[in-house]
Image 1 (cartoon, rainbow, N blue to C red):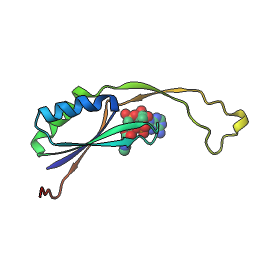
Image 2 (spheres, rainbow, N blue to C red; image 1 turned 180 degrees about the vertical axis):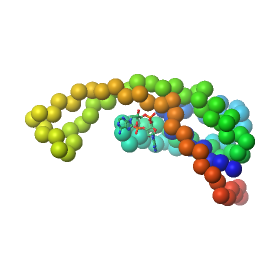
Image 3 (tube, rainbow, N blue to C red; image 1 turned 45 degrees about the vertical axis):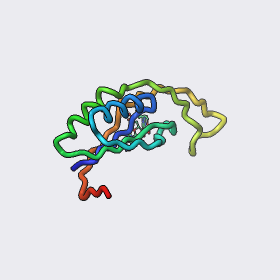
Image 4 (cartoon, protein in one colour; image 1 turned 135 degrees about the horizontal axis):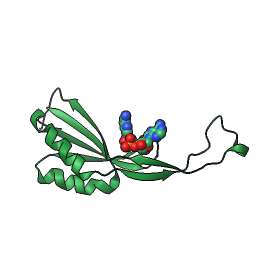
Length: 109
Ligand code: 2BA
């Protein structure tokens, strides 16, 4: 058995949730925050049999789009405030960041 952890953009989360449910995957959604943009994103936890992992990955790929996001870097340590000009930069986010990890035990009481 495997655990698929997929970090996706909030805009894709309902569509992905519907697609997983329609295909009989059990999924849990967590409201999470990206470390770099400090913006909300959604993490899906999907436990599934090894032979269905590729199917989950296909569903994630089909339902999650890459998007450009603008961020304005904030002044950080080591930068003199007088000389610091926070130019906005464009960052490409997603479609999805996915980890597949082995499950040692699964219990459903
Ligand atoms: P964030 O950490 O908010 O990152 C958003 C996007 O910013 C990233 O998109 C990437 O394009 C860019 N980015 C991240 N760190 C950067 C850096 N040090 N310098 C320049 N650009 C940087 P994605 O790669 O698609 O990641 C989307 C979200 O997935 C991330 O949101 C984070 O929540 C999660 N994630 C990505 N890689 C991860 C990892 N290795 N472990 C855990 N979570 C991860």
